[in-house]
Length: 394
Ligand SMILES: Cc1cc2nc3c(=O)[nH]c(=O)nc-3n(C[C@H](O)[C@H](O)[C@H](O)COP(=O)(O)O)c2cc1C
Image 1 (cartoon, protein in one colour):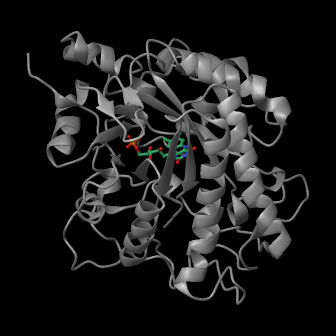
Image 2 (image 1 turned 90 degrees about the vertical axis):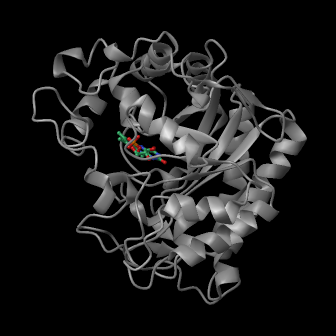
C-alpha cells in the first residue's frame, strides 16, 4: 500500500493535534431555520462526516443580526444558539475529529430580503459589481466597534459549545474582505484610505478574538483566517495586498491561514504574466511560519498527496466530502476503488445531504458536483474561472 503522508497526524504550534491532515472545507448547507437555529438535518449531515477528517470547518455562521448572508445560515449571534452550536460540534467530534466554527459578517454581500427589510451595511456605500447587488449603508465608527465585539462574543459561544477553534471568514468578498478592498472601502477615517488603515478592521477582529480565547479558551483553541487571494474588480485586492496581509497575520500569531480558491493549481487571474501557482507563492510568503490549508478541486488521494508534496501542511476537501463522507476511512482501509467521484441523486438521502442543500447543489453547483446522471465534467473547471463561492460571476 502506498504511504500517504496526509494520513499522518499534525500538531499546530499551540499544541492542538490532528489525527490526519485532511480538513473538510467550510460549506454552507442552506438548511438552518429562518431564525438561525440549526435543524436536525444539518446535525445529521455533520454526524455522517465526523470521524474521518482530522478537522472539520463548519458552514459559516453570522456574528451579527445584519451580518446574515443567506437563507438557511446558522447563527452565532446570541447565547440562545449555544445549544445548537453544541449539537454541531458534538456531531463532528467523533473518533477524534476536531471541530472549527467558521464565523463572518456578510456586509454588502447580503440583501434586504435576507435581512427582512433592513439595508445591508459595509465599509462604504458602494454596491458590489454583481447583477442585482444592493447599495449598502456605510457603517458608523461605533457600529464597527460593535461588530468587532460581536466577533468576540461569537468566539466565546464557540468555546462554550465545545468547538476546538474558530475560523474568521476573511474571504469570498464578505465584510472582513470588504474592509481590505479598495473597491468596497472608500472611507477617509482611521478605517479606510491607506492600505494600513484598510487592514485595521480585520486586525482588530483578530486581536479581539485572541483576547477572548486567552481569557476563556484552552491553550489549544485555534484561530484560523481564510483569505481570497485576489479580486477581479478595479480597484480591487491584488496578490501583493494579500501577501502584505499575510505578513500581518503572521506577526499577529494566528494558528493557521486558509486560502479560498477553486483550484489548487490556479495562477493569477489579474496578472496573466505571473505563471507561478498562487498557493505556491503563498507558501513562499508564509515561509513555514504559519501552516496553510490548501483547497480546490482535489478529489483523489493522488491529488491530495501531490499538494502535500508541493509543501502544504493541510489539505481541505469540499465537494468530494459531500460526495464521499467516508473518503478518509476508505483510503485508510486501502479501499480506494470504492471512493465515489460522482454522486447519484438517489443517494442524496443516504449521504445525509439536507433537502435545501440538494437544491443548491443541483442548481448553483450542478456542473461541479458531478452528478452521475450527467456527463462528468472535467475537474479543471475552476482552474481558469472562479467558483461561485469565490464571489465572482462572469
Ligand atoms: C455547497 C458549498 C458551500 C460553500 N460554503 C462555504 C462557506 O460557508 N464558507 C467558505 O469559506 N467557503 C464555502 N464554500 C467553498 C468551499 O469551502 C471550497 O473552498 C470550495 O468548494 C473549493 O473546494 P472543493 O473544490 O474541494 O469543493 C462552499 C462550497 C460549496 C460547494
